[in-house]
Image (tube, rainbow, N blue to C red; front, side, top):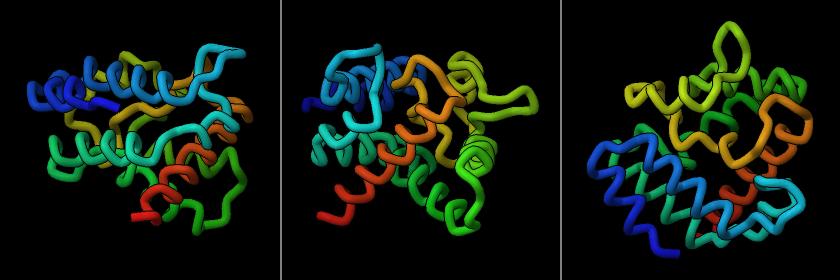
Length: 154
């Protein structure tokens, strides 16, 4: 669970490489095979210390602008609106800059936005091979649920 490389990339402003390193850490900790990416059930395998270290690295490097906690807080606000699952993710994607008028953005469009809106990075959908499917929404809900559980543990 060494996040030294992530911290160095963030300190150098290497957003794309830092996002790749984040993905490597998450997949290394949770992906058990089946398909290349995290499945909903695999999010429970993610170590709390790792999730918190990743979040802390992003938050510290961006003065609280990016990180998993910021994303989770935005998602909680949107979930409070009691929208259908797909509408929840679309609004979340719009708020963090992962969705544009054409739908879910591709990785290149996301990662080229170092000055994106709060919560823009790391690009968590990048841990999955496809975006904008029911399977993706389920995984994302479970991912942020796991992070919130970890954060609540102190």
